[in-house]
Image 1 (cartoon, chains in turn green, brown):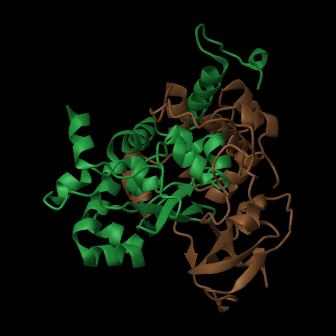
Image 2 (tube, rainbow over the protein chains, first blue to last red):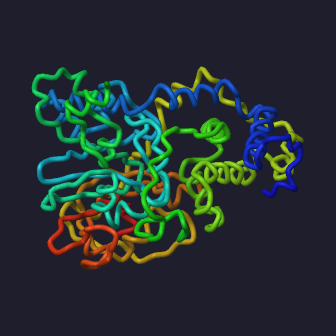
Length: 210
Length: 225
């Protein structure tokens, strides 16, 4: 839609802002969209659902071997045990990083991402460069994120082309034997659950907090 | 369809830009997110139709626009295609007809999000392939929606896992019909997808003996023995 065609062009609004405003007004006027429902949707994913959920899942898998087993064999149920479920996480699969294997997740066709445990995807995850390159040059992509793996370690890239949503279970950092589950969850950053970072080491985490 | 949404393996996009951390850098993007989810809850289309609508954006515009512009394009197209609003209403921003549909209210949102839209289905037929089978993805080029990215078509791989039968998106996106198809995780060796060393010049990938594999979710109709 070009700018000339747009009616009610208010001063100061860009073409796209005006286009969205017109659409919102139309949908509300026709009773198709309830503004409070929209606020609820935005608030849910902007403030309530986010990677803190996935971090709790990972920390529990680190301290509870039986939970880890359940997470690896039936992730949807194991994640639901923690209270996380629903849209864009209906069918979950956890993939575990080990000394031999590193996993990372992409959606080359759109932006599939496990919302209940990670929230909405970061901008780079949805952008062309990551979607194009993750499957064809994963080590170069990891290097851009500052992850240099042992060249002997196998890299597995998971392209989310169905409704299965992937959560990477990162390796537990060293020197964390004495940390509580809650303290461990603080080490689990979002990118480590996408597989483009490692979990934080306790030393780094402390520094960043200062 | 073979368009610019199918990005796997494309070159020229440069380094990954990690500068933007806000989910909604501007208010219009936040609005598009809210409007898209709220309109989806009217039940007039499914997620696969939604993806197909975004993919049909002009290929040049797709690459040149931001993520929520894709969503906006898809939403406007679906609203008109499904007769929820008229093209004239969309153009003018003024309602001309009343709608029989009712907006979802805020109190129903948590339950709807919590339920999601599971795609797992029962299927009368047994899966045609077993874990460990070596199979090939068909070479096919539908003009309609498919979840088989171009970079795996014609390529060999191993069935790594079976995920049960799920709604087949290629059908769901066109007719809205929920037909079950067996779904597998297929493992592709890097060389099979991208050839030998030297393909990926930017990085250190695909060197001699490098261990790299790509796992893709593949529906049975995409696969041949």
